Image (cartoon, rainbow, N blue to C red):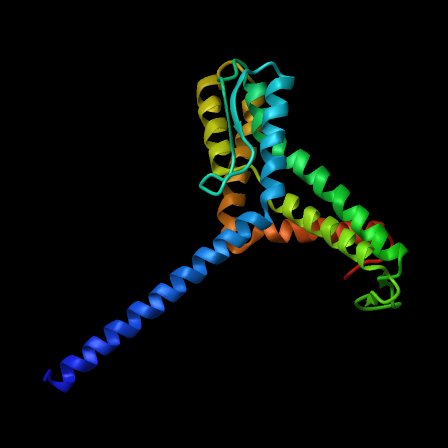
Length: 221
């Protein structure tokens, strides 16, 4: 027979191992769910890179619009000769994702307001009443809202985008005055990616949704 102390230690280790496995499994499931939930935003993000490359004449070697991995998507292209082209390729997702997300949020807000699902109350948070609206319409509105948030959450250029811009800035700063404008933007991208750990990307997407409802005449705040 093992001493009680040894049994207690073994039991503690076993419970700890089981809890760690459960937490790890939950974390994996949560990561998987978040990856799938934001997949449309990743697709739009990489599309913005790819279409901008083609627009400025930079050859694209490979495009992965979405995958379950890190990174979730990427575009491999040749190095631009001009800093302007590199800058446009780097910041394109912010512009394209923002416009696409705002369009989806506006459509969602207009439908929600027009069908009476969301209506102003004269003060405070608007009233929400989905009664009388078909299930198909509700599903459509939910899909638009999801797309708006998912695409908006992926609007920030990645750290990889910032690294590529910084490399171009260091190489081209003597020949391109645009670098003077680009460097602060690069710093903002780095800061935005750090703040993403504090859900800054989620807050940005929510801000776009709030703007959409304000434009639709039913402010949520």
